[in-house]
Length: 166
Image (cartoon, rainbow, N blue to C red; front, side, top):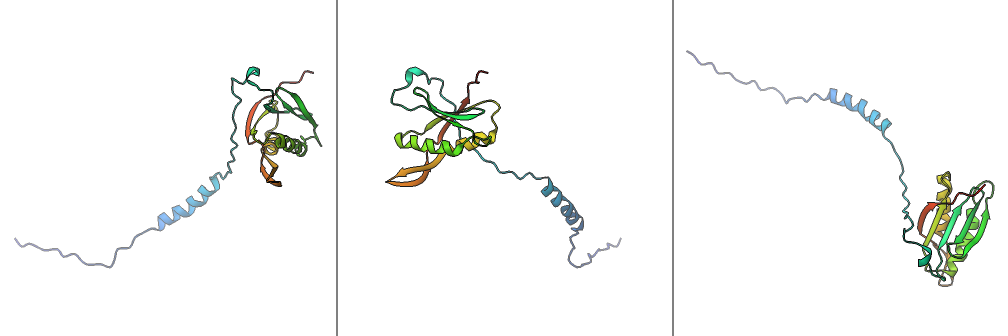
C-alpha cells in the first residue's frame, strides 16, 4: 500500500469578502440616523411646600413670598402680610418685566431670603410658568454698591392656586 502524501498548495493571501457587510451598513446607518430622536432636555429643580408650614410657624418679620398666576394678572403677596402688588396682564400675557422689578425691590429689603412659592391654576400654560419662574429666579441685585446680574429667589416651590369665585 502506497501512502500518498497530499501537499497543500500554497495560494495567495486569503481575501476577505466584506461587500455584503458594507451594503448592510450603507442601508442601516441612514435608517438609524433618520429614526433617532434628538431632543434637548432642560430640568428645573423645584420643591413642594412643606406640609408643616402652618400659620403658627410664621414669624411677623419673616417674608413668605407667594406669586399667584391668575388668568388676568399676577398677584405678588406675603402669606402673612397679604397682597403686595397686583400686576395686570399686558397684551394677554403676564407682565413678567413688572414682576421682575417688584421682586428686585423686595430682594433689597430681604437679601437673605431665597424661597418663593408659585401658585398656578390647573390650566396655566407651561410656558407662562417658566417665564414667571425665570423672572423670580434671576435679576439685577445690588452687590458692593454695584448693580449686577444675580439670583433673586432661586428656591421655587409650586402649588395650586385657589380658584377665583365667579
